[in-house]
Image (cartoon, rainbow, N blue to C red; front, side, top):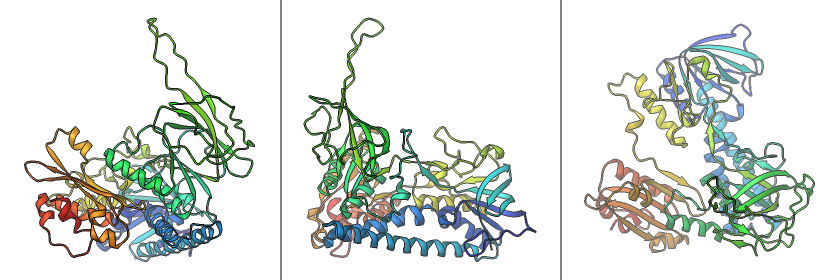
Amino acid sequence: MSISTPNAISTPSTSPTITTDALIIGFGKGGKTLAAKLSAAGRKVVVAEASADMYGGTCINIGCLPSKSLILSAEQARRDGANSTPETREAAFEAAIKEKRRVTSMLRDKNYHKLADQDNITVITGRAHFTGPHSVEIATAEGPVAVTASKIFINTGATPRIPDIPGIHTTPGVYTSTGLTDLDDMPQRLVIIGSGFIGLEFASMFADFGTAVTVLQHNAEFLPREDADVAAAIRAQLEAQGVKFLFNADTKAIAPAADGGVRLSVAVKGMTRGASQACDFTPAGTGNAHTDITGATDTTTTTSPTSNPTDHATMSHVQTKPSDDGEPRFAEPAEARFCLTTDAVLVATGRTPNVEGLHLEAAGVELTERGAVKVDELLRTTAADIWALGDVNGGPQHTYISLDDYRVVWSQLNGSDRPYTVKDRKHVPSSTFLATPYSRVGLNEREAKAAGLDYVVKRLPVAAVPKAQVMRRPDGLMKAIVERNTGRILGAMLLSVESHEVINIVKLAMDLDAPASTLRDMVFTHPTIAEALNDLFA
């Protein structure tokens, strides 16, 4: 049954209070899977979801699946040459958005009915907050609904982290990933604040559509957690697509531009200029997209945005000052200021657990220092009979981890002699869907070295893989880390076509403690990308 759904918007006046076996706050992967399992076991379940647009959770509505739909459409546009003119770009983007909306609408409807059509499950659309250890109030469009539950499961996911930049909340044309995947018109120019993997996926996708993309990175190193050779290969791929990078860049303010675009005031450390010109940063200021910063004295690794003749850069030098003990202090790196004007800005600075408004203190649920719901290895919170699943508990932010969280919780509810715990989870893989997908599992070389392990590095250029040549996708590299004396696979990094499929084979081998020789000698079908593992681990 449902309360306040798109097809039946009515709250039963005779039922302002519901008593149930289980309440799940949030319709994400872990929560919806748990709801169906509890229902099948004969338990009464209430699922509270804040928005009818989020039935099924983040992945199918605003995350994995819509973005991958657009990425595939963008790749098709590039292959077909539809990104070559403004007219064909707009048509390709419009078709891609239409297909994305069709897919997400269909999946949202199926996910909703999969739960709401069950007799044991009540779906309530409204924002929930705790009023006590086992009581919650849900604010629906028709009024509050009180729910009392024996067991409560928090599954509210994560929300984009927005940095404290003046104008970021009030300037039209500034988006999170949610808004940028639902535009009616394709931006011809896009600035991305943040160069993590979410930002890079969007950079690759919009570059394939034909958008001029500039990525602003706060520090000097690209993908600092990845091995240098892998990071360099990823960057080269993105630059070949036309993506521009600006490092050591801090966005100081954002405001509307006179032409209807967005204007950013940006400071770049380690860059000086022979001459400076004030950046007239006002809401009505004028400027050109991708302002030219070439000609600056660059003491860091930077790539300038596409040049334009108008220069709005302002130099700002930090002078050497004496320290308290009278000794001279080294000067801070010089800083250049300039303006960028663009059609759209993507804020891709990470995601934070979504706990706002839950009033967790009313239930005795504590948070970690990083703002996630505090849980133990069984995902139990600090309050009895309350668990937290998915991104909200501070674990890896992947849909498949939310699903695995369901397994952790269910193993406690189904009478298992030994519950499955977070510590039992092995080797979490990840994939980033760039033009050439990047996937990895386990340790990279940087991490293996830091851990003091004795290892050998295996490398294979993707150009050496026959199937990659057949697919006309020879770009990238494969890299694996193997313990020297045992042959144990420590990790793998695959920048390769179909890497998101092949990485699962490596994970399985690692989970089974199979040595590298297992993949070296495995009989694979031909021609496939998977058979490259024979050569990689040789």
